[in-house]
Length: 196
Image (cartoon, rainbow, N blue to C red; front, side, top):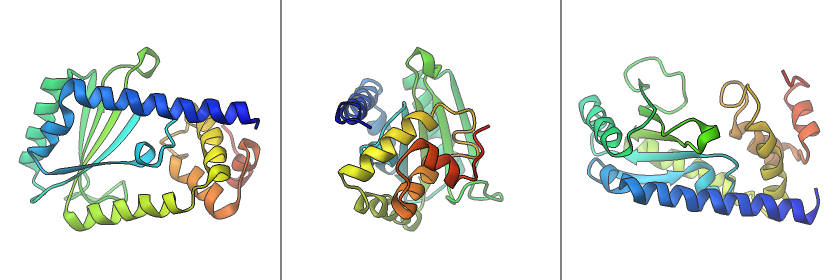
């Protein structure tokens, strides 16, 4: 990857984070979240590794209660006017994610029209601390070389039909930071050679 290509991906991350800041401010999202707990913006925003309009927020709640979290969803929907909002209880039912908590997945619009996906997790303090430590552990492995490799691979993988299903950002982070993967071809080889 050339220096110009790397700089373009770094600039794309900057632009996406600026758009995320504008989204949060326009709809008063952080103010709403603060009425229910302590929000922490995490994931690719915090790591400065954004390649698409996806925002991850952990909401550290004094009590993780379904009724309060449903009310939060109502307040966010009233403010954002989303195309889609889905609730999942990963706290009281067998978790399909590795985060014991309550979840809102909010789509402001279709991605191709500039829409955002906002993931809000309502979690207890210990779970929140564990998730934030996980993000920090990824950050410690980042340098100019690994950041460029992750941005380059994620920029392609995030458009793949399997992304967020059987292929995730975490797979990219692990491949680059733990296995030394540097290119998209190496990433797919690392994933077992399957691209379908």
